[in-house]
Amino acid sequence: MIENANNAINKVVIVGGGTAGWMTAAALSEVLSNTGCEITLIESEQIGTVGVGEATLPHLRFFNQRLGIDEPEFMRAVNATYKLGIEFANWGQKGDSYIHPFGDFGKPQNNIAFHHYWVKSHLHGNKTPIGDFSLPVVASQQAKFDFPAQDLNSLLSTFSFAYHIDAGLYAKYLREYSEQRGVTRKEGKVIGVNQDAETGFITSVEIDDGTQIEGQLFIDCSGFRGLLIEQALETGYEDWQHWLPCDRAVAIPCAANPNQASIPYTRATADEAGWRWRIPLQHRVGNGHVYCSDFMSDEQAERTLRTNLEGEPERDANFLRFTTGRRKKMWNKNCVAIGLSAGFLEPLESTGIHLIQLAIMKLIEFFPDQSIDPAFSDEFNRVMQMEIERIKDFLILHYNATERDDTEFWNYVRTMSLPDELQRKMELFERTGHVVKYQEGLFLEPSWIAVYLGQRKIPRAYDPRLDALSIDQLDAQLEKLKQSIVRAVNGMPSHSQAIKQIGDPA
Ligand code: FAD
Image 1 (spheres, protein in one colour):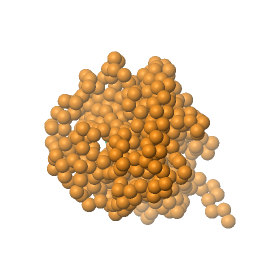
Image 2: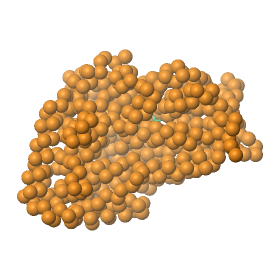
Image 3: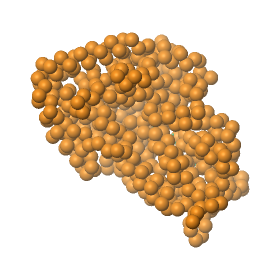
Image 4: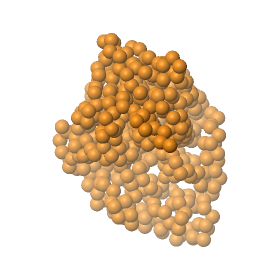
């Protein structure tokens, strides 16, 4: 028997027009284009958006490709630069620095991961940083950029790339895209949410001009306030502040210095009670300070940020407050929370926009009919919970894998108790050099390796199969690899040249 004939959803309402709202509108307008489904997005200029969120992950390229967006046009529209990874400074110890690249270390050999070779060599006294064996790390250090090669035998195929973008301009770009595909934008403030008395499903929202907007599926992209998912549906929030205690941020963008070489990576510099970001766009540099209010005042956080600015501030300081954690159900009844309304993890690994993209893709995969079978929402919630939990553990690693003991904040995060799964992972690595592998989850082996080794977590052992290789043979192989990476990077254009290639901003 066909269960869902003629029961298709024909009215979707999106509340919120930040990055989450417009990414959702754009993707749904594309995939629902032939179904007759009406999409309405409500946003309030008076309330505005969170106004941060500039560093992305490589997956955004595939989102744009799926929407048929032309890359150079997009880059001009959002003043983008290329991103090969993130530099972490002062994390393991003050003065340390490493790059978490979008790519591999070395090349896989005989099914033994490259880092085991490095660990053996390191334990025998070779102090060459593992970054010297990663093409995207060396390219970042030399401010070079090129597109990855298709030939999998080439070292130039061992990396990927993302963008630094002006997220406000990206939302504007996607608004145009969505409106051209029939999305209706409604300006106004949502002041009421109506629910079915029996099921609790949302039936309509009321805007401050008195209009009622009805729908069958509601997407809550209203930001931290979680207007539908929390204020109306009271879904609940799991608080992770005991593991990720930073709860505030202050942001001050600066004008870009046209005489300074443009770098293809984000910078995350650990500070006394948190860390500072630096994100280079074409026209400006995004700067911010994420900190923990138990250990640092707002005034001190702003002062530290200003002291470290490298250009003229473009705007006043923008202060933000948040509670790290996740909504207990991101999909509850006929409401799906996407973006900040679904939860918050600090932007240390640029995962905010990625989680938005993932939620949109999962919603498309499990797009329901009007009955909203809980089988869809259960699977959506399971996948999203697993993804955000694993990202959470990866972020905790950055704080816990440290030798810093110079402030109360670092003493707390270095000695705090860890989630069980992370504790197990870290022990396995320390004792065997192996990284726990999963089929699903955002951060794969090279990412864990970058942080462990970059933050002084050197394992006591390596894959025993490498005992057959003499240390002289091993060091000779490593040196050869290092030199081939140097040669490959020497042949790449500078990042500034690559940016010039895309043409002037729109
Ligand atoms: P918002 O931008 O807050 O948008 C909410 C929308 O809802 C707005 O349009 C608002 O007007 C509307 N709204 C709210 N209430 C109402 C109402 N009553 N009626 C009508 N409309 C309403 N992510 C990354 O990927 N990379 C980064 O580098 C990064 N850096 C970050 C730094 C900080 C300090 C923070 C806090 C976040 C960062 N993020 C980053 C996360 C990223 O900013 C967000 O994921 C992204 O901006 C999505 O926000 P949003 O659309 O969910 O919410």
